Image 1 (cartoon, rainbow, N blue to C red):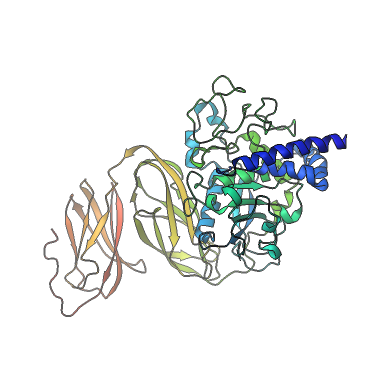
Image 2: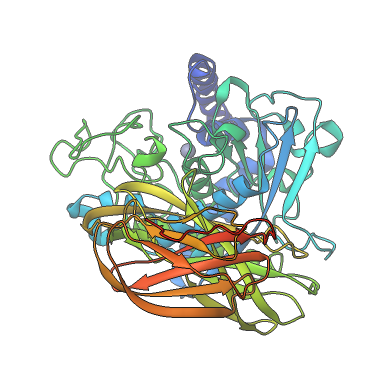
Amino acid sequence: MHQQLSRNFSILLLIASCFISGILSAQTRCLSHELHLKKMAEDANYHKNFEKENIRNFLSEISATSMIDTTVTIPVVVHVLYNTSKQNVSDEEIQSQIDVLNEDFAAHNASSLDVPTDWINLITDSKIRFKLAQRDPSGNNSNGVIRVSSAISEFQIFDPAIYSTALGGSDAWPRSKYLNIWVCQLEGNALGYANFPGSNASQDGIVINYKAFGRNGNANPPYNLGRTCTHEIGHWLILSHIWGDDNNDCSASDFPITQQAIDDTPNQEGPTFRCKRFPELDNCSTTPPGIMYMNFMDYTDDKCMMFYTPGQIFRMRTTLNGIRDSLKISNGHVLPNLYISDVAIDSVLNPVKITSTMCLDPVVRILNNGTSTITDVSIIYGLQSGLQKTFQWSGTLLPGASTQVTLPTLGVNAGTQVMEFRLIESDDVLVNNYISSGFKVNNASVSNCSGGNLIAYPNPVTSQQGICIKSQNKQSQLSWVSVYNALGQLLSEKRMMINPGDGIPIDLTNYRGGVYFVNVEGDLYSESVRFIYIPSETTTEGPENCN
Ligand SMILES: [Zn+2]
């Protein structure tokens, strides 16, 4: 019996090897199943673990017990193995990947709006979240990122060196407390693979090609929206590919292991590549709605991946209640010691997922992680590689407290995009000063805000006679025009009608040199502009007429 099994796996391995060598010239979406077959054939312990108690038994046992429906936050450690500066992905790119995971697993991702109506009721928050580790296995402070300058410029597929500091990679942190993600250049541009439970502890985690890691940044289209990681974590939590990895047969579904899970994904012949138009039929699902090619566990392009079904979420949460249950009580993402000055930006409340306005009032939450009271915070925000605005928040944020900050209106374009937020305080912990949110503007009912940006001129200004501001909006509105200093203190305020093209003079007679903000707020839009005042004794001429 065992010999028969081994022979079958040897044949499968041979098929897998042919598969790998055959398509490495192109980009290979995922090699998790191939890695699974290889381990089943070569690793007796893995074979035993996977076949016996660790998988089949625990799934059926756990599914019979009650599932605790609380949110689980998984501490993540990212091992960056780099040989070139490009491979050394930035902290911001790493955080963007964490942001994508949290959007996807919360079903807050903009692409979920494109799920066909036949399946729209399946969209569910998994209540699984991810956060970079804040303490290492010894309890010391950490930002959750290990950087290893490696002599290896390209790791081979399944190379054990990836998981070994001595061999040019990076040793795993305990899987009982962390999800290990290794980011490196992979042979043949393979995008990534995951180790299923049952693997050796020193190799438990996922491996992602740096070119498919994070949102935008160094990642290459069409795998530049962070979905390789979303997909591989699915495997790491015991999801199969949506077609059931059955050699393009219609015999298996993606729920072959347990009878308990809800099978809510259609039977599918094989992987789907690129993007498809609904409905997509195949030999296993011959009538609409057809196959669920937009599922995270298919092979479609990042922008066309959209959701996990409740059945898949049930499977992943079962894993977190079973073989990976120690992660639920891990403190790996909790700061070991408080810093004196540490303000964090920890979530985006608007925009998420969708908006029908091109005139956005972004909302973020800031958190005082430090031990001292915070009274002012500068936030730079805007569209990725677009116009960036600065907002000075002021108030009282006690240690441990958080607050929502509504930022001045920003005009955005229709379509799918990413908004970024960055704190510019140089506090003691920089890694939590950035966050981004992917969203979509659909059927915009308010569009006059686009291009409605406030300008200040001349800027910097040297004359105390003042500076002009002008709004490029196309509508008149009754507005409050307010001037703030760099600490966010209100210096002057007046109410006036602003018509398109009006230039508004701001008198600087009683002002000292420094940075100031003018805010124009009305019913239609609210926006700010920053200017610098450098008083000069020789310059007296000012903007007598701003127009
Ligand atoms: Zn896969």
